[in-house]
Length: 132
Figure 1: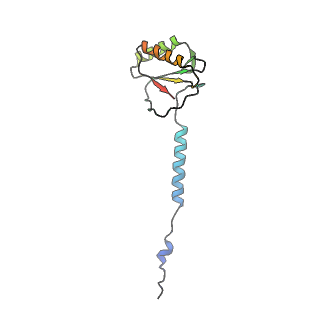
Figure 2: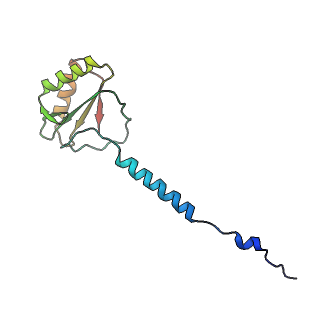
Figure 3: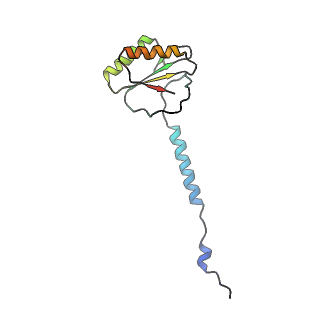
């Protein structure tokens, strides 16, 4: 004797459209989240890749970029080493939690970076973040 299929068996089917909707919503979320991420303003500098690092906080900040020719950009404006150190010292005096970002071009001379780090250290600024 053959078993007759019940009407309930016909109603069972896999609904794939809700899964596709969720996948597209997640994809859209991540695309917009990545588009809204903010990087330090270091135009004109090609950063060298790094394998590890930490997220920076949201306190007052100063961005120092070391260009390919060994010059300095202070928040996007050309500056001398003395101006960079003076601005960093003034920022640190006004806000002890201020963050100083240093972004060195991948082709910048290493000596210029060491000179900047030494000048900041002599000014009493030992806490900074290297961007890469």
